[in-house]
Amino acid sequence: MKKSLIPTLAFLLFFGCKKNVEDNQPPADRPEYTHSYLDSNHYWRTWYPKNTSSKVFLDKKERHGGRYSVNISSEGDSNNYGTLFGRNFESSYFAGNRVKFSYWAKSRDILGEGTGAVFVFKPMDEIPTDINENPFDIFRDFVKDNTGVDLESKKAKLKKHFYDHAGYIDSLPIKGTTDWKQYDLEVDVPARTSYLRIVFGIEGKGSLWIDDVTYEKIKKLPTDSAFVDRSEYFSPLTGLDFEF
Image 1 (spheres, rainbow, N blue to C red):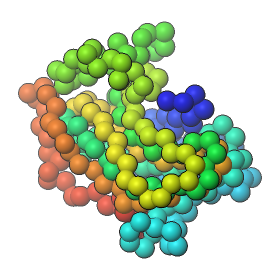
Image 2: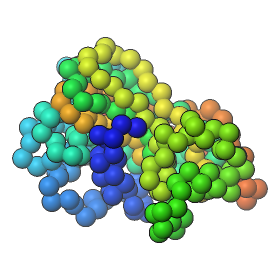
Image 3: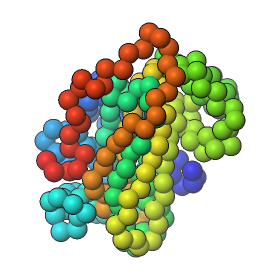
């Protein structure tokens, strides 16, 4: 993970600590930031600094499929946090599974970095208060205790996924100018995960279009015998294609 994006990710964590994530009621506002929604259902939330020409909006002119994509237009005046939008998901849709999120993206003249990222957050009561503890050890133990999977053999690969002590991410950078391309992000979602968040944004200047987000459960994780996956009975998640 590039250092320039760390402040943006820290900002996102600040707004992630609430129990009812699908309700998505606004948390305490940062005074220097504007928060709004892309849709009347309040699925997708946008963040960009006040007094800026940067913006996030539904774009009907440039799209991969359907009527709309989401356009992130950053003028490089977004301070330390970038211009971005994202959505929270209840963990019950994904818990106990390895999940692949796919999306289509197109970029134009990005100076800096565009990114798509999926965050997996631990329960608040399992985030340690001692920040001097080793994040890998904590996360490895958390996964092993809740899934039975020992991550030690994957340490080198997983180190890039740590997000402070609160959970982990998978992310992909996008730079320069690119045509429509499909990207995949994969995360393991332990049974005791608090919630997930998918985020797209630009740290720097340029334009990024996002469209047709999908998800797929690709592998069952070992879980405690008390865990029951009832997600097959849930109503499908809507609004991922931005066709509101």
